Image (cartoon, rainbow, N blue to C red):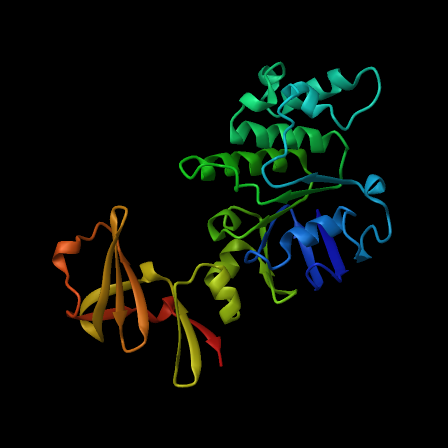
Length: 297
């Protein structure tokens, strides 16, 4: 399902945006770019104009909103959290059915204060689904997750949402999280600067701003044109672009070199040893032409 969005948000961040939501869509932008403001505007929580749902109050919008950190009520059980938006004598049984569908039915009697970040995400999702939404809005869904399990839990959350067949818009500043989405929308300077599948965007950033959002570490101007390449796509070679090592840092199991060539270039060497290099050493760099992205002038 494709949902067309066109919105103007005057404050607190001025936004004029037009884009599509396709399946699980990531809204990728820097902190302060207006991602949360846009989600709140779509939910009817901020004054804005646009389509769909123009001028509808929040309670009339078919939207499920998951704020940052899942916002689980710690004094309620998981079942009571999931049933929070429901009314009627069968509200608890309906909530239990939703928890069962999401694979966390066994958590129903547990306190909201005693569940993990990933479990809290699913409880919040159950609470949002209780409204029978036409769109799910997720604000930084990976923010409350620890780094060791973030990708797995986020992938599980996306798979769960995909199984509901409800489109979702997830705000994030993390390119790795956006890479898991079906569709990615880049937000900068109050507008959408590019959108497409993760593969298309990561392989073909259309501007310097897009390349920066997508995690390109190396962006430089040469002969009047701006280029970008990922640090892991530069290799040391017997022959190539002359460069001087200016900084060395271990990065987990990898090695990160900063070089002057003459502009600054960052290289990541898988499994590299810091002892094999020294600041001031001359090296040659191979930048494969197919890995260099031309961003124009």
